[in-house]
Image (cartoon, rainbow, N blue to C red; front, side):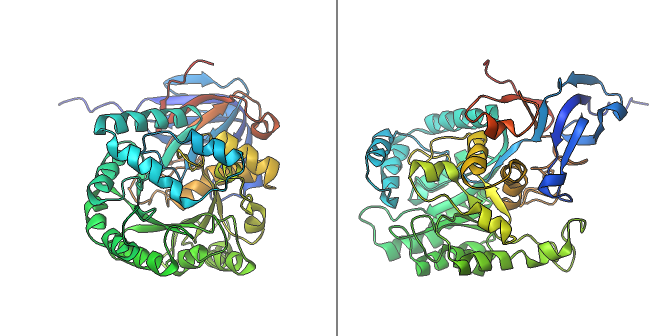
Length: 428
């Protein structure tokens, strides 16, 4: 009789001074364990509790009293690109205002880059994000803007990112008819990218796509079986939030300019979720725990464009689930530092440390519908630490998460595990 294969090796991480679990069944202020430990088996978490009660494991790591957090979940990035837009940034800092048309500069450079170069650049950016504690990320197309390039960028993105969003409706290319291009986004381009993407997005904004054009894109992509997201209310008041709510989008991102009606509409999508209570568990057959439309705030972009910071405090107070994401892109937010986004949310947006950490972990997972074991790609839940979830953990070189805002800009990420594997970080 053959010997059965050995089970997955286990790793105990103990002596964690403060462990922020962000478990769905807890509010942000009650999700912290002291003097804690975590056990990984393979890619999953198999045990969490007091360090004094930790079971034996094949390997043991002493956290030395440092703070432990879930890996960041970055739910909004644009990482497939080539070229440089630092001159545009300098001009904006000198007083020019941001407009959507700058995307065309990146489109030209990205179309000219080889598959090898785009893949190399994407891998390097994903590695930078991981070194900063990001263990799960989404990225978008949108710098191709024709059928072949959008397909190429979607294919390349799918080899690196955890989830990929189709953003053919990023900008109408120079010289193209807006109505004809919108039709292309809804037909041949959509068909070309479909094998590689899980989501579709549209830039519903002055200078990009009108409300009616955006509605056509969302309808076509929903009919094709894609989940929906919306770039909305970034440059001014508009239809983005209304469309996101109308179509049941998983998130509406930017949300700098919101009316009271916009906030109320977003809040209404969370009525069943909030009424079910924190101990209701996962989604039930009646849909009582079906997530609503997450408001994704992008503070690094707001600072780079000198836009009003998104009203995250008002949204949270209204019962809207909020995510923080980097919006890493070459024009308006060339950073993947979620630490920076969390610090900004605390220092300038009115969030508590616990709320900001939750928005950058569980909030991002909600926006990607990756917060339970039933997420879209069938993998284990991310964004929180619980038994059975994917073993994504970061240790800070600090005793508490408060240091993210208390010591802004400091390189606090000390160790990162993704799916149970410790990542090699560059030396400090």
